[in-house]
Image 1 (cartoon, one colour):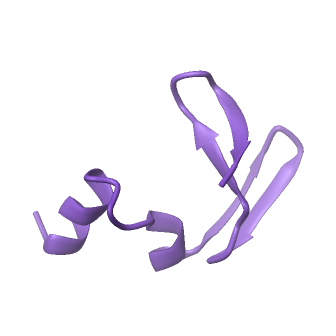
Image 2: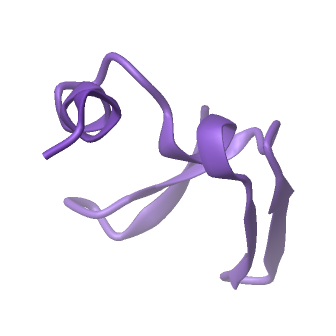
Length: 49
């Protein structure tokens, strides 16, 4: 595993800020590297970042 991968898994780095996103979730278009939304897998809903 890379240092970056470990940092993302440890919550020290943000995957979207590093790679960007272009995805629709629940009617919200997540795009770019500065998306204000994140998917909460545990509660299965969108949250403000």
